Image (cartoon, rainbow, N blue to C red; front, side, top):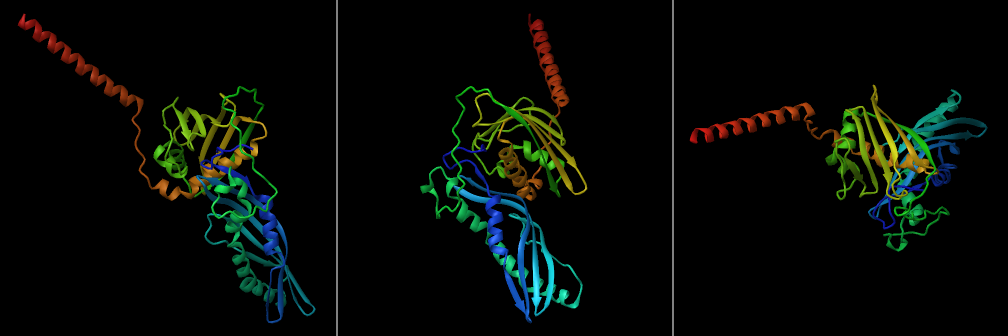
Length: 351
């Protein structure tokens, strides 16, 4: 697996934690129970756990990025009465302050409605308490192998996972024939504006914020210019721009074989709810599709989304058009010509 990192705990290391998350949520939520007025309610199963869960290390710091959709089944009993229903969590995410819990019941009898009320008043608050520990438990139980040297990990705990990330051996100095594939992905940026995302991707002042870096960042809107992000681990050349709509660039990870670049086309489309981002990337080394998608999602789009209020409040500097530069150059030529004529005329008079 390849991502935007090296092995000295300074750049990104990313791990897919979806299997751990499903197991953890099952253990924490299934069989969770509550009781009120002799009505017993209990979660019986975790039916859906869909989305992304990534644990990341950068500059020696750990942070989790996750966005899940959860659905669970519950049952209630009181003597010989039974009731059944579901609890849905449309968005359980790292950047969501308060999750929404939707409780449904299969029937509408008096006991069914009473059972639903117990679920809402007692069982769901218990779920919130368990889910509040998700981020810290993810880091504590699944982070040891994110460090090239586990002795450097502050407050490290015994790694309980059998999954291990191996350091990426740099192939910068080797010339290799690379088998490639095409990677396409999309991201729905709710509440965003295409112009602001365009600026975030091309303005170095904004990029410093969402990449969380201050060193070795090189970025420009000039066609043909080179760029370097994440302390040089992402490199490329800007090929073409359609203002606020499209960006084309060559793009590579530093760990890829020497001289190998993919080609990225980013399309930004405003919609009623925000911006739809479509990315087409050709020339990606085979077997790296999923890690590349996760890196784009986590370290580009979700990071820009986190810092979007700050980014969108920044002043957008007006670009001087090429025609304007031509105008100024023409004025300068006339001034130089006029001075030359004046000096020549003055010299002639003296003679």
